[in-house]
Length: 456
View 1: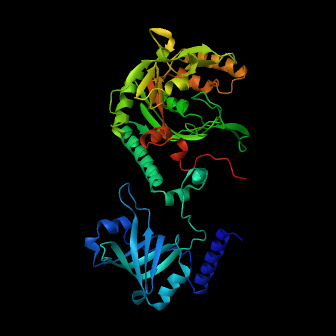
View 2: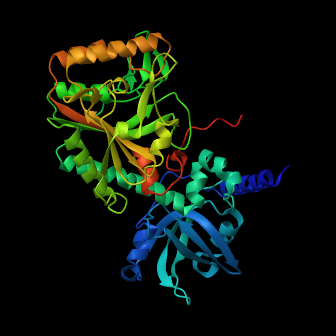
View 3: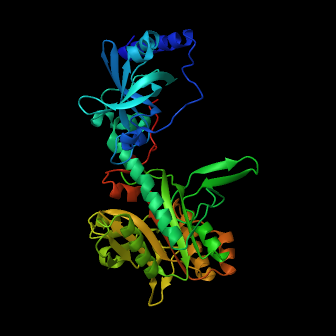
């Protein structure tokens, strides 16, 4: 039996001892008067009052008839620790409860503590425990060390341990939530309405990507996990909603690398009576509201064909972008300052409106920052006849073997025939944006549970 299994057996024995003492190791009711952060922040006001705190035990230090230990709850912020020291004394809780604590409680257990706050001789804010209660008995021991390349895969698989042991990781996910909250606030304040569109779709449209396929037994039809919400959001423009946005998951059955995960979070928003230039200006303001340090300078605007020259691929006639032998991705990786790459070739942009001055190009932009494509937007194609021709061209590529080309969407064409106002839209990759704003290296660092190959 290995050491970890031995430790588990010891904890299981302690669990049985709690039960034999008539104590439920997993009670449903919890008493709590303050979070740890509230107790620390209002320490002087609470000095004479009895309070009750809860949390996970992170360390234990015994000293004969007294024991110091730290508990941690989830009330942390980016600047304040959620840990507080507790002081358990045999004289205060009695011999029986004191010995029970020593005999049954381990690091990792959750406890409820009632007592009075005071400062130790070293000036540390501490709760003198008058009464304690087990809330959850942990059966497995939290690893004492959690670092290095050899653990990186395990950290992603067991994110719960990563969050317990690495403060920096927890801070990144708190910041991620704050970023999404700020985006919502900015869009709401600018008259956008948050909506929800189907994730299960009969046609996987709105982008060029290979979808995940499933089957709905109730209707006996095949469905696809959405690759983008775009075509449904534009149907809402047809329906008279002038400004809409959605933050949600998209799914693409493609490769995985530092910039790609099969399921990812995308923000898409659309505004009637805007064009792609209006959308670029608005996007710049939105991003500056999130981080003026990274997005503080005026965004550059560079013509696509000044960077990338599109040529026809030998495979199925689909266009690939090369420039002096370099791919589009390799060229974009060299762009560090926020840059809108604009006016793309029509054949690689099936949903964008053509430029009136040059029908071979469309009113489209990609936002590149620090080598990452953060956003893709354009003046939306609302001419049903032009859209029919684009879909038909894409359909030829599909029949020639391309699995990522846009399918022909008859229902969307019908929606356009009822009339969609001139509009602009954009998709912003939330995961990539968070990578940039948290100075992370890969998407897996800022997705709580990234897609992983099972160990077995």
